[in-house]
Length: 84
Image (cartoon, rainbow, N blue to C red):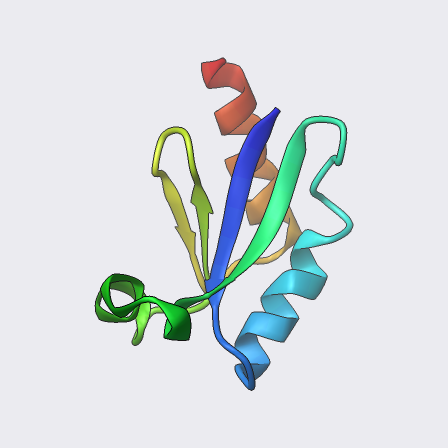
């Protein structure tokens, strides 16, 4: 099972929107999706502060940057599965 991290922070409206876009397309049988609050980690803040929300595949470190829609998210996830 692949792990995905949605980089964001509390109070980020776009992060909430991104999570709602991802929920219907992330197959829980194939992916585990974690929401990561970048405010808890200085390195993540430095890397993602002006870019959130960003979906990160933990294994490959590939990223899907906002803005994305359901179709773009599906294509990103399908590409990840094809790499396995």
